[in-house]
Image (cartoon, rainbow, N blue to C red; front, side, top):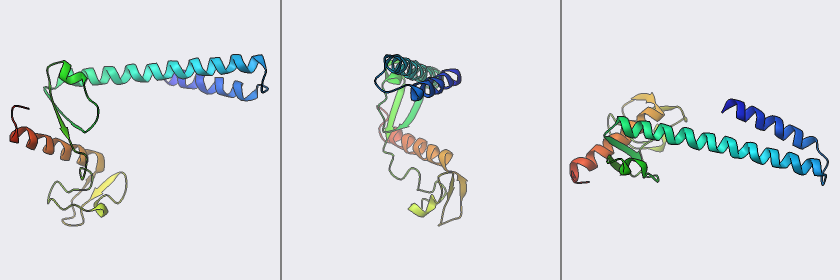
Length: 140
């Protein structure tokens, strides 16, 4: 993907130097569009492979409320969790406040002082919420 991104950048620079309305500009625009398509296809393919690897490896997947279909097709359990308060609720004491997430990278509870990486913390909160839903409704 890095090579494709570099080629896209070079094609955009070439396009920027072309005179408006010229046939060479039209050709350069087509080249830039083709490079955008290639990069988009590579990203889509990477995301598909990553998702399929997760589906193959784990029997239970807990995710935020996003559009998810691949895991259910493979016969896996998918639990959809509401994303509200997954990033500002403390996993240690349960205190929920916007101030707990002072920065994008660090979660620091104002109630008990628990400090941890914010993304890992939110992922654990999503997992616990999913497991709670599974326990409440095992047939899901």
